[in-house]
Image (cartoon, rainbow, N blue to C red):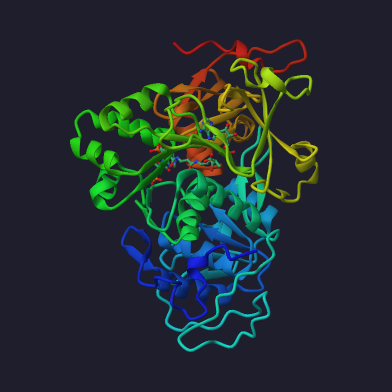
Length: 510
Ligand code: MCA
Ligand code: AMP
């Protein structure tokens, strides 16, 4: 296949056709295409031959360089959430068995990573050796001026392994090939007219598909620019978009909700949004109210797209078309999509496009993952033939637009755009000595979409563990975004005759 990063096809270390063009800016660090070619080329040469590497995926230029280097070297990368708690980290390292961890020189790594060789990511390496064994027959002789950066040409080779929560058990490693990444990014580029002229602004975490693949690899594949804010703030968005030069914004609904809240008093923010070419929301549903507030203040409609770690991007609303809040648009180029009802029958003909009949979304296409790492049974269970079962329930409108209406599994929670399994939080909470029984649910939250609620039966009713203590417990074992935001104390959990917890029978918040 062609290179993932044509703009980095830098045998001559020039960084492609426009070497001086900024490739990425993150906090204090800016890298041009030539700088990125140099930094990633040097690192690629150091890691070549490693079976797999972990990347300490802070929101920094170091993470971008580390991942690009892994892709150039053909070494699968496992991005790690730098806030991952000890149990989750041990699980991911045990499952993915990386040979080294790539981190920024100033990063402090937790004890759980002490057993792995550490390779520091240099943004401006002093000496740049040649990359060994390029796949296309290149001899490896370093051309005048710098190293050879030759990407592997095996499209099916694993590029990234991204961990994602399921309904039960610890997170699974989703193996993503170079083919899937290239196909999905190119389909988005087609739908959004995304080009090298675009400057993407975002503040998404760099250990998930949204922030890393769409938000970093996307602009670099196009030869465009990305500016990462480091941490999300409405001020950062206002500064970088529009007059600041940014043409596109990517965010999760929580970010757009916070933007919508601020629009009332911030005319600079409204001007910045109005000056951007494209505002894109994904990872969870953007509520109609937030769509409307942003459209009213800026004259711009937020474009929604729908994807999943396992499938990368499936559908998108087409910019400039009739705004259709509530729908996630039509299938992207190359993506086949069908709805399947409870009996397993495909909703065909008018029934499949009546805007009413609900079915599970199934997809197939070059955007799909290669399987779950070390989990052949889970991989097999996720497919119906060559169709991937998303677990998302939807209807389709007459024009083919997909409207998501819910999820098959009630035990998956989407909070702040993160997918979180209720089971993994319940298991973590059950390890707290103050808890006898627990059930975890998600309930509607205007900011987070859903907030995690822990229903706790304390071991000692007279001394129930405090809410903050339980939040810290989960944050320390799993990840801060998996911590319960609310704890409710009960004498007993509602159960059926078989002893199964009846989550639907839990008292409604009020
Ligand atoms: C709070 N913190 C704690 C604790 N409480 N740390 C340890 N222990 C505690 N008890 C810390 C947090 O780590 C964080 O630190 C800070 O306090 C605030 O935490 P929190 O309240 O959770 O953050 P927030 O401000 O509410 O975050 C909102 C957010 C975030 C910025 C919108 O949820 C976010 O980045 N979401 C993006 C999710 C995403 O990218 N999803 C894509 C996956 P600090 O601030 O220092 O970190 S889905 C996907 O990829 C598919 C393919 C798709 O379709 O896109
Ligand atoms: P993840 O497994 O973290 O990649 O999350 C994927 C899930 O996020 C999908 O299965 C959907 O449930 C949800 N999702 C992604 N984009 C959207 C969207 N635009 N609207 C509603 N839900 C979405």
